[in-house]
Amino acid sequence: YVRKTAALAIAKLWSAMDEEERADPALGGALAEPLATLLNDRAMSVLGAAVAAHQEVFPTSWAMLHAPFRRLCGALIDLDEWAQVVVLTALTRYARANLCPEDADVALLRRCSAPLLRCKNEAVVLAALSLLVHTTAEFSAAQPASN
Image: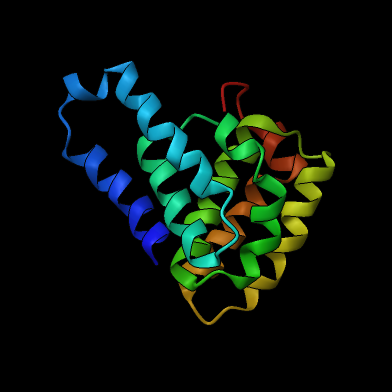
């Protein structure tokens, strides 16, 4: 519970800062180190909060998600519904930015996401469906190269 709160505090701290404070590279580094540790935590309750903090503070720092990518895929089914939506959204963005649709990691992500289509929570179903659509070869081929 303490680690989950720490992850949420990182996002809260970031949102309370002004632009000048956010531009300080020393502060970014100070937040990145504990966040990277939290992204590799084994507790499911911590993972959702850590990914949410990552998306708030470092939304395009894909290197932080590279190491825990496969573990996040496998953990999707065990996360609470709020965390499932956050992680599905982050992994969709990660896959679109870093993986080709034919990649084995995309296949793993799609395989781990498919059971969530049967969830009772509509937000989880929509996030899973969005991931499945946005990681297909047909969708990627139809999009401009900048995506």
